[in-house]
Length: 137
Image (cartoon, rainbow, N blue to C red):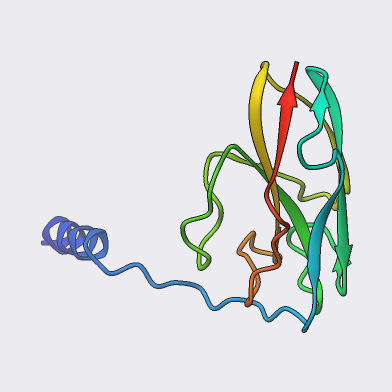
């Protein structure tokens, strides 16, 4: 009998609707931006991306402090949902880092910053940089 009840519970939870987490409010005017490289710049295979943030502070992942978040860098990706953690084309900087040295294959690549809250979910409204394009030689 317990086995049947457990199977029923597992099946019912497998088909339960996914409930989106409430998003953390972002302060008015908060902006993320890429300091370097510049949009359209040609870079070497190894280059540094410097993150900028205005109107908010940086805090490590897991730290629930108002008006803070941590950076995520989308490399050749898009965010399709803002109510859940970000996907596979995202580099996560949960330690509060504000720059990264990347190595990318030659060609055209897009870069975009997205600030995540303590749960890695974009704020409301999302704090997102302009998408830039770099050319790796």
